[in-house]
Amino acid sequence: MPDITVSALGLDYADKTAIDDVSFTARDGEFLTLLGPSGCGKTTTLMSIAGLTNPSRGSITCGADVLFDSARSVNRPPEKRNCGVVFQSYAIWPHMSVAENVGYPLRLRKVRKPEIGSRVREALAMVGLDALADRYPHQLSGGQQQRVALARAVTYSPGVLLLDEPLSNLDAKLREQARGWLKEFQASVGLTTVFVTHDQDEALAMSDRVIVMNDGRIEQEGAPEDIYRRPATPFVASFLGSANLLDGTVDAPGRVRLDGGGQTVAVPEDGPLGGVQVMVRPEDVELMAPGADPDVAPLRGAVTSRMFVGSSYRYVVDCDGQSVTVSARERWEPGPVRLRVDREHCRLFPRDTAAGVAGSDRLEESSYA
Ligand SMILES: Nc1ncnc2c1ncn2[C@@H]1O[C@H](COP(=O)(O)OP(=O)(O)OP(=O)(O)O)[C@@H](O)[C@H]1O
Ligand SMILES: [Mg+2]
Image (tube, rainbow, N blue to C red; front, side, top):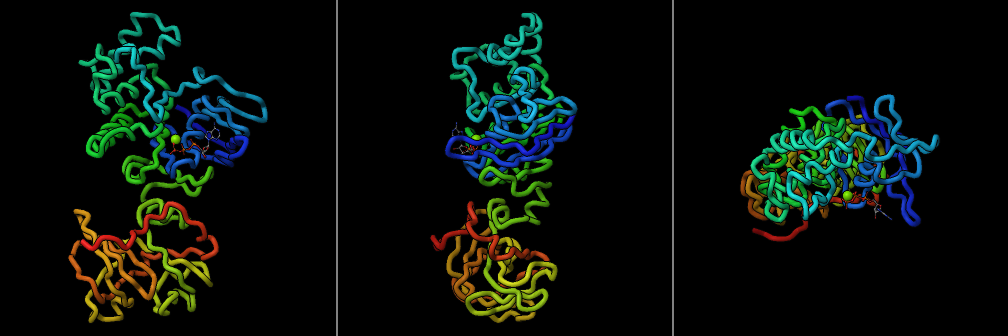
């Protein structure tokens, strides 16, 4: 299967630019995820590839095949794009049985009846629903309906699978199972897949590569580990997991003086100068007793809240007026502590680009459990 390449794609509505300058390539067999908050343009991008939304500018190619090119007025109809689509709401027909739903794209493409029967059986076997072919959607669980939608998307052997939040209607437990199942399914069929979600855990767990979108634009793309460990912007840092963003000023190479009390923290030397935000993940901060060696744990703070989240505790530590969220397995009581932060776990962002960070999930100082 050739690569799908999206170039400088944009779509303007009367009062809103839904996407702008979106460019990426989905490679052969790859599980590529578009991740971002509600309204950032994920569905618009996906439906543009499917041919169900008309972009205002840019191009979409599949190998040498041009699917869409605004400059050359090319816009291939959806049924000629070879994309299997699972919509955000599944959109399976309530008045059709499972088998009729799955066979629908084949009927649209005028495939002969006996062949429809065998291909439907094959697709249902792939998703483990062969025994339920005669049921109707209202007789199925959410997870089973999701599989019907998936079987329908793969029944005519598309080259590309486009999945728009296919797991969003499942409860937490089922969703977890469906992730594993869907990932295995995708890998075994080897279909190039563009997957849309606003769930960062889902994106990190399932993807070969993730594209983080914000307000119609791409913020960063990379392997899950890369974007989690080396976020390019404060937005990505905050949207993908929890991130502390501490205000300060670089006052010597590799050292930031934090706002508030002027305590210093060691940081990588190759970062920006002047006013910065120091990004550090909650799991990369270690709490130590107030009498700990200042050379080991240089920052002073005070635990102000604790939340038990099962695998660990989440603490909020006040550091001269700045809140630091810390994840730790040990139970600490409120009061003074020292904090250890390793230089290699810190990233620096220039303070002027840090304005207007959306999607931050810094913990509120709430329950003291
Ligand atoms: N037909 C339309 N007319 C005007 N604006 C639209 C239309 N469709 C989408 N938009 C706007 O375009 C932006 C992107 O929408 P899109 O559906 O791509 O977001 P999304 O990332 O899929 O969000 P969600 O996670 O909520 O599904 C949103 O601001 C949305 O309000
Ligand atoms: Mg959407």
